[in-house]
Length: 275
Ligand code: PAF
Image 1 (cartoon, rainbow, N blue to C red):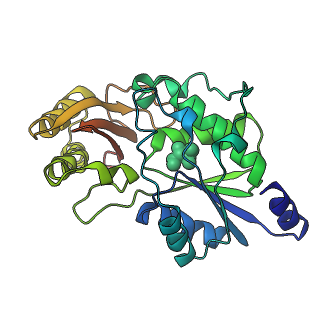
Image 2 (image 1 turned 180 degrees about the vertical axis):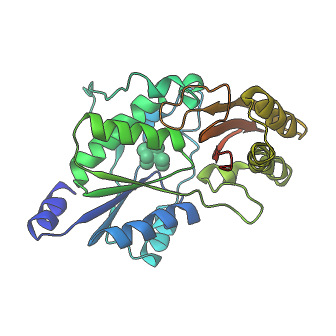
């Protein structure tokens, strides 16, 4: 991959890059279509990164089907797929990590210790291997996107980071490789994440500004469904991810909910309509 990137750069090509963990869905394809638009060459990585999974998480069972992924990537005009073996990314003596100080201390970082260190490290490695001009990420993983933007800025990586809006199923459920784990019943409960975000947006439009009240409303809506266990419902500053008490400007509402054994996340911007 490093040789191929060098060749592309020497030929004056701009490289657009979409990092993924495979089991591609429409959400990934939307990132790739954006990448296709933004670069001469579109490179996609498929790598289930062990260092971003906790010991009790689904690394071993994460869904995989490389042939299926290759066909889907082909259908949107991907030029190069980089699918390294674990040993090629991490040798036995591996000991260098990229860690951010503040952004991982919120939202998913609280219940997934070490997760964002794993993400920041692997994304840095992938950036160094692929050497993209532009990298595209989904807004569904809002905290990940914020962390990567900050990291690229802090480390002067000279890569444009582009966020793409969440792609949803027709019932509103945010697309995720992990949706494949849901039973039919759980799938119905999972819709409550999207419905609670919509409800909060409506509440804000009606004039409710108190974050606690909005969070209570969302938690009650989600909690009224079977199989759910809320990890967090948070309203925070969209840049620092610090909790806010009131929704005066734009605020981020972010959720993580376990539905059965599957942990799902979603988010939306809450914004009062200007007077
Ligand atoms: O969002 C993902 O799929 C992963 O966290 C990423 C960015 C590919 C890093 O492993």
